[in-house]
Length: 426
Image 1 (tube, rainbow, N blue to C red):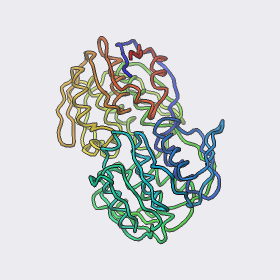
Image 2: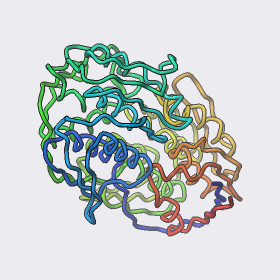
Image 3: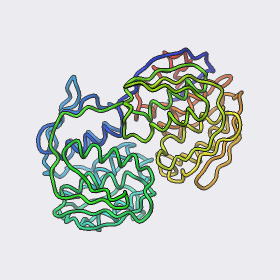
């Protein structure tokens, strides 16, 4: 689907952040392994999280929709072997989490769409082998489809890089309580995207399993069992970042509710970044208000928060002076190579951008021109490009706009309420 976005007069508005994608994925996976029944309240109902719920069902876990959320009857770690390959769509989180979970029993194949078939898996497969599990890339290139022969999750000590994807570490953490003996995961390189591991540890603790994190250079998990419970999912700072950026870019005011102040989500760093760029940021219990202002360039280290790259790049395009976005080499392994995609697509609006190995340098300009841009099927690129198109002169045409449904199905509706002229054109 393509959309047309016209430079618009943005109104002040108040809205609610969608539920956290990261917390929803983890709550579903942990509840599926738990002993007893869980109710996941306020989960994100979107393409990515639906893939995780479908994977739970594929392993024989009973899932029921309720008015107040999703009820999951936990397996106690006793999963049924799926009859067919598990198709995860576009969800990298799902394929990584359930590759580790598949280690518990049976022979399982996991695959996905064309984007998933390009995502690296080898570090996770090698780490599972270190724990007694046979896990291979069917094409021999370290990418999906992957085949896991479960039932021999002996535990022990394994090693994995910490700077490729934190999802690998989270996957191992979630499955490890069901290994035959204690598991120690040693990182061979410093951990990037640590806040996503913090979210994993937070969910595990919420379901009754503690992890010895040892300074985040090693993690030790003893055999145990998650306990079913009611679990409420908080709002998503990553998704909220596009709404906050719209206010910053248009110099309007937005209040976003359902954003807890003490969240483990690393993407809450968007608030500090907006403040550094010149916005007035007001935090209240459960909500954030951003009042836009003329923006100026900053130095931004996104090593722990790579999902903020498209948002910060969009902000930088209209900021006075230079913005340097550093420590983002691992953003090349997302739904697309986000570093290259940001450089290529945001240039079309008129900003000057230098792409380096693990950084972007952006020289912003006050007047941006609408352009034909491509999201590459990446939901975060689509939202950031749409927001910038809303403040550019003229029209912006965005392809693969439907990708926002992966994480934020109501995104375009909220923009329309804020005064953005956006329409589907085919």
